[in-house]
Image (cartoon, rainbow, N blue to C red; front, side, top):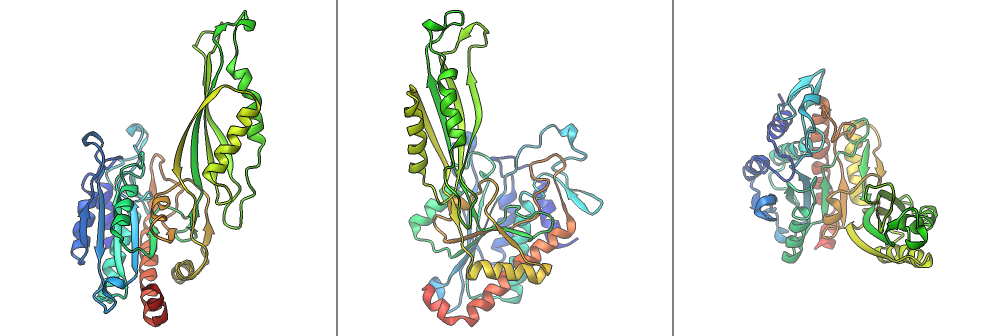
Length: 398
């Protein structure tokens, strides 16, 4: 059994349903401490919903010292609930092998990535005991949950300290068929809203004595659905607006409701801002003369790491292992990269195939574990070569 597979299985066996970490960060922390990392626990949240966070840093002992650039590996130790256990072919927290695949909750999202990152660091530091860059890890047990006491809390703390971070690799499962065939070099922002259209409740047989908020808000919703919010750009598809829930009524068939509640969401690119989207939506509601209230929730801003030295280095590392080019993408949902991008300019996401994430019988090809570790290791090697050969680059960074 490879070190990567062994560590992955060890992590899967921990029942770390969000916001629980179980012993995952302790297991990873012991491996990192053995490599010379200083591991700091940063718990957050109420006792009833305690989130475990950890920041680990291995400084370089090269002449650059504190001025050395820093690579961050980031990921989450929590997993989504399993759903009914009877639907699983095997216990989701007992690593199981069938036909060359490893089954268990978190095999793809994302305990395999965490294991591959740690083992890659172990192998790299055996080859290069004094790298030209510092190495760090950011781990949380609040990525699959509300994400209010996890990575965002650690990032705020690191920002207040002035912690330097130059590059970040988030281990989200980004690949389609083969590990490394797709990299996420950015994500769209997410802005949710709750619209309450107000009317006057009354008997359905006397509509003249009531005001039906469903009827009143429908023309505005139709207009909002038809709006092209922006045209996107070279990195992002156009901003979209979607209704997720509509609720009105008392449950009785003869009562005109007094209000209609609409939940909606923007997935927006860098061509639109939070303020512009809010103002445009509000202007439509006002144009239709609605009486309403609005509540907004900003889930995260869009971020992008344009093609450049770091992205090219990662793509070259993948090509060395896979023999094929890695596509760049900004599609999909949000990730903790939205928080890290506020303190680290170059953030990419790279992990295993995502076909079974959050599903019953989540699994990963065992061969993909070693491929992922090999890619992470190749990135570390190439970064070392890049910094060693490019002395002017190091001068610029300082």
